Amino acid sequence: MAFAAVPEESKKQINKAGAILTLINPSQAELSWAVGLADRWRACHAYPINTFQATLRTKLRAYGGDPIAAQRLKRMPTIIDKLKRYPNMKLTTMQDIGGVRAILNSVRDVYRLSGEYRDSIRFPHELVDQKDYLQNPRDEDGYRSIHLIYRYRNSQAKDYNGLRIELQIRTRLQHTWATAVETMGTLLGQALKSRLGDREWLDFFALISSIFAIDERYPTPPRFNGRSREDLSASVASLEASLDALTLMRGLSVAANEIYKDDSRKGWSYHLIILNSLKRTLQIKPYDRDSLDQALADYASIEAEAAKGEKIEPVLVSAGPMQKLRRAYPNFFLDINEFGKKVKKICTDARK
Image (cartoon, rainbow, N blue to C red; front, side, top):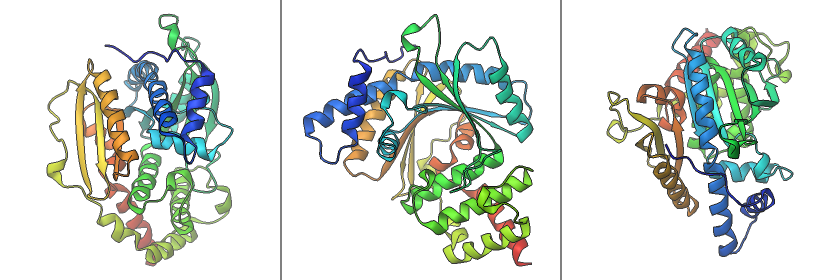
């Protein structure tokens, strides 16, 4: 399989491209050059995340409950938004352009797997940062997960050495919450995932995260410390009524004939998911393991369409068969049913 090469341009040039992408009115020539180089920089992360995912899938064989492994290259609009929000960040040091995710049954399994990675003397990659959002959930929105940031090292593929890969490890409950935040952010046109948007919606999700944390016997976001589950549930019910959140969740659906459903074909290695949130339609283009170059080219082409104002959101992912793809990325299927059921139960119990 052919993988994209690391750009020959210097890191200074790559960072310059990232800086141009954050400008309000760059020239067309500057923008074209910057987009091309930034896209090639993103594409070269496909090789290390592929090897990371292979290792992860091997490790997950020892875990029960049908755990999920998935990988993705960060969307270019998200890369640009992050560079804008963090002016001191450089494109070459962004930690999550290449991401790998593990979704497990329990917090115990999350810590078991993260420990296997941190404690392994045979894992060649360099752990450069780690964040435990289970012991220290984000206060603004309640985000919970474990992140391990690695610098890639491979004596057999030295050109890729130094690229940074983020491994996210979370429970199904945490994953249900996180993807619901992304789904509602898409529907509302708000960057809730980036802790931006309507304060009531951010509080709504932070409160639910606190209830999930209590259910998993882990700390709540600091601003909710000391509050009981019943008290938090009452606040969720009050906000749900104000936002009419459950009605919005029930309204989220995608036409079945727009979704690629043939789960019997196991040969696909990559899927390009193209969500039109305005029309609520979904297109999924599958690629075999030898067609990564074409997948990356199609990904860049559709992102260029989106940059012109089209209401489309593409993402290139790998998660195995379609059933697991949908479970790994329910936000791109506008699939919020599981989360909605949990919210309904919280509100029903609070109003009894």
